[in-house]
Image (cartoon, rainbow, N blue to C red; front, side):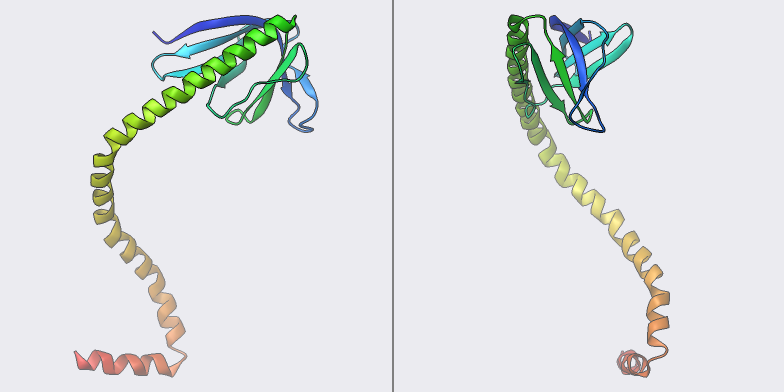
Length: 177
């Protein structure tokens, strides 16, 4: 099955210059197809653009992304996962508006999908988390205590040997048993 393109347009693709974070660097020499894809297996929406065989945009739409029209034919959005800002130059205002509309639509769909999957996660993970928590603690606790005690033991003896008080204090305790 995999991904299906759900909306395609043509645009010039830019990325923000990673050094200046101001200048746009063209990543396509000419207008290329920019498509929204829906991945039904992972339930995610992505914006993908290929220049030949090279993916110049592969951006998963998340609910907190915003597509901003910065001029009549140019829009941009930041992709925190790719750690970049993508810019698209369109041939007309109409194409830009259509793309922005779709961005909004799929962002909303991504938000709903995320909420649904979180509900599912909460429903399924609540009992398993409790059992996992219990399982995790029992094997980890003795080992981690032993591990830290072994590591600290030399320090404790080194620190207490030069001083007389701690060893004197320790003696009566051991005799009382």
